[in-house]
Length: 445
Image 1 (cartoon, rainbow, N blue to C red):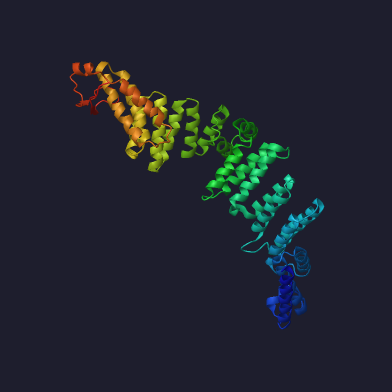
Image 2: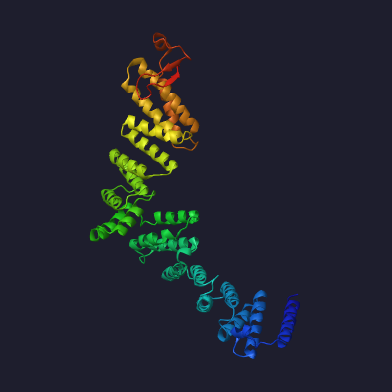
């Protein structure tokens, strides 16, 4: 059967030769195939033979025709290089020795170099595409040449610029971080510099790849708060007012995976905020000061972020944060005010109700006897509303359930209600604490 197949191919080739003999190759449309009609005819035939040899998996013959074409008309057709790359990849996979394999790998890299030389300006698959493909092949076939891999990917990224495939960015940065962890060829400064340089390349639709990029950086060992502080302390001592350098340092150290809150970080973050105030940097500072239990500064920056925020949804989230920080600081009145503002902006969010319930329950200590116990009816109702609205996987669910049980245990007894003329199921208006003025239902413990 195999012999029959090759006889058919040979017959088709002879037919093609006969057909081409009747064509006129003197026209300008054939100029890229040679200087004379005879050269053009020969090269076009060799191109057909390359295609047929490759399709029939005769890679030795295909390699021969590929060499003929790049020697005689290297700029004639991009298909020559597309087929040539596939030919040598197949020959690499069939190599019988390492020396033979390396020879074919060199040939494959040459295919990409020649394609770049003659078709690097192609509008569809030009230099960026060619170098991207070469980098991927280099990673596959030259895995041990770490410096060569980095150089190949850098060339691809330089050619691609902001349009570089995000998968390529992740592949390069992953290998860079691997080399930092496993060799002495890459320094922490280089990893950090490349992270800062490449992060803006990820567009709006690169969420998955951006997440991978950040994860790789976070696990690299170059991204710890201590390592970043060591690097940027020296740089900022030399250029303390360099806004771009401050922006880079603050941006890296404020990443959610790190949550840096050292004296150094807070100092540079506040300095950068003074130079370039923004809602985002105010939020980062607030988080850092909250971690250090400096609630007054945390609240200050949250309020500054709130003052410039225009999006109602973001305003609501800021009010929630302010409420939580004020609650931690035991500023119950301010916490309740922020929670009410958050609730008014989004009545379907459970978190403001959670904060309000906590404020009500804690404010009961300001009251005496039965009036204080009555506050827990409102605290219970508000926490029940929070639990109704909170997502099942919310971090607030468990403490909300625990608080409900605690509030119920603080309800007055039936005897205490009797002596205070409060009948079960009747309405009662709270007169003390932060829940003063609110109407609720009488219940027994």
